Image (cartoon, rainbow, N blue to C red; front, side, top):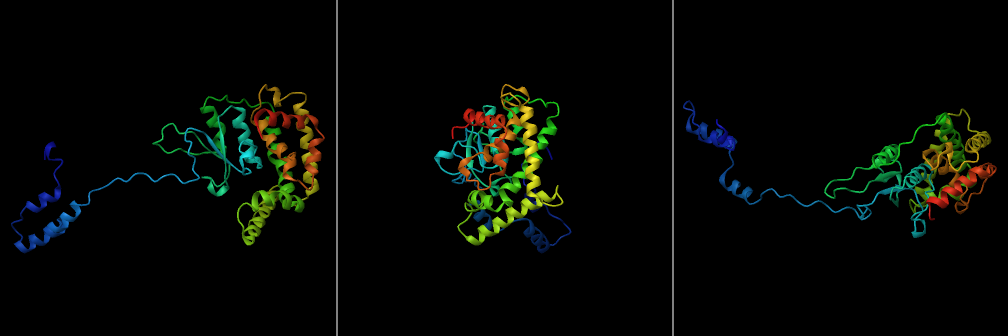
Length: 308
């Protein structure tokens, strides 16, 4: 076969090739396996392959594809559109993106809408509307910022040890403070994380149980017994150490602009000091207010990067 024969259908050659050892009936039977009857062929000729247009995006999908959209836990309403998230994990990255001057739109969401099963996640601005946008999960946001021209932060001496104070000590106290303290759970966690999910009391009660159970399980990974007072004492010591580290500087490690470490602490101090959340049991609030430079650090970041 030469190159000009490449477009020939192999079934056509089967229909025209005779085998002298076969009877006419046998040959007719063989051909029927490989060829469609003429009437059936006419039916298929009337239905050529069609490429249908893509489905439209869901109504809640971003219509402004030229903008970066961060999906976070956030209060609904126009007054909260640029306000800080009430969730530490979300607020950390929301603040970090703002510190780097990344143009940003926030959208209220939940864990079920996230590709990774947890918020936040970032949907970058589309460079080509014909290509799908790949979401950026939280653990890749710092790398993505660098890819957009942001400065890669150098790790400071003993920074890992101080980061552990935030990510483990303060976070453990926070889990107890929000979920396991009965008064705070009813006053803060319930309206923010439970009441907004459903109008069914049964569903709300189930979710509330799941949240509190998850908090206990997380604390039991590092504590044999969950002792709220001990967790609070550890948090007080962590605030003291962080206050000493900050000293008279505006931002941590003597930086002239805030970085990821500032965002990590701000994610807790902002929420703990937020009077609008209605905390009933103020233990962590009092422990934090004992350190004026940490309070001023939080106020400085709020006034400098958040309009609400």
